[in-house]
Amino acid sequence: MKAAVFRQMGQRMEIEDVSVSKPIGREVLVKLAAVGVCHSDLHILTGDLPHPLPAILGHEAAGIVEQVGPEVHNVKPGDHVVVCLTFHCGHCEQCGGGNSHRCTTSEAMRGADEPPRLFRDQERFAPFMNMGAFAEQILVHESGCVPMRRDMPFDRACLIGCGVTTGLGAAIRTAAIRPGETVAVIGCGGVGLSAINGAAMAGAGQIIAVDRIASKLELARTYGATDVVDGTQGNVVEHVMAMTGGRGVDHVLECIGLKQTIEEGFTMLTKGGTETIVGAARFDLKVELPALAFLREKKVQGSMMGGVRNTIDIPRYIDLYMDGRLKLDEMISRRRPLSEINEAFDDMHTGTLARSVITF
Image 1 (cartoon, rainbow, N blue to C red):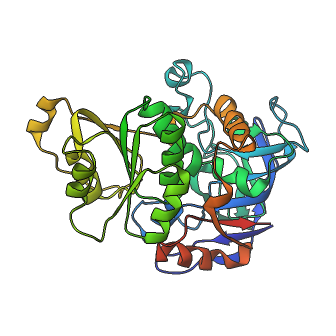
Image 2 (cartoon, rainbow, N blue to C red; image 1 turned 120 degrees about the horizontal axis):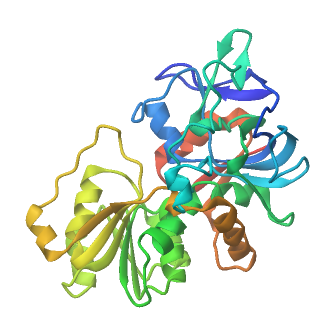
């Protein structure tokens, strides 16, 4: 099969021929139809997050099941699936407690003594997020494969595999926004737009979108933002405080992962407010928060994949899209073939696009 291989920092990916193993145990071989281009992949390309090389990136995928291992029961060849990166065992403490997205085992991976999933001759390729979806096929653990209705378009479905689920779930599950509450969403890429969409679904009274790109702020309005703040025009915190009558907001959803925006988000909270960190930061990033603010019962929490329960939430999110409540069409700024994978990341560097999708 063809795959985009990332071999060395500072170099662009190359389309190469890569071999994929046959499924064993609980593994599923999926022929991909569409893959989203996510900022988490960019973090590997820039070195912000460490990862073994050579690697095959990509982790926001949808396609058709081709083959299954002998222990697979939830999907069969021909099924249309979203592949979600929260693979899980189903029996550890976290899985048993209803938090399968926090699974503590490595059962989704092959053991060191087993043949690699992706290889060529004697060379092994490391699949990002146990997926490696910038390729024509992926071999993954069955727990990440969620069957979907056949009338769901693949290029929209793939976005639910990561970015949309992350933002939407952060708003409605992690932050648990309640009707009438005030919300600020920092960063209006795919994750941030989905967080705005989720806040609107939850009935937030005021949703303030914060970004530095005018086109993204306009798009945020179509997703449910009631107000917007251009980060290039003065002090962001002062703008938000003014929009809330000096009170501050009940919730901040930080969808970028930068020290400055995390700290600004905490500052714009009202007493008892909660900041939810959704954006992926550098592995060595540290933030500074005023200790006295915690006496005002301000809180900071993280969100991992929006607390998704794969087999329950993803079909529901798809139904929300098909019912016209979850916005996905507007999020796709550009579609490209796999051969233009580097150009897709060039687009991301400009900061003007919500999401690019690789289609096969």
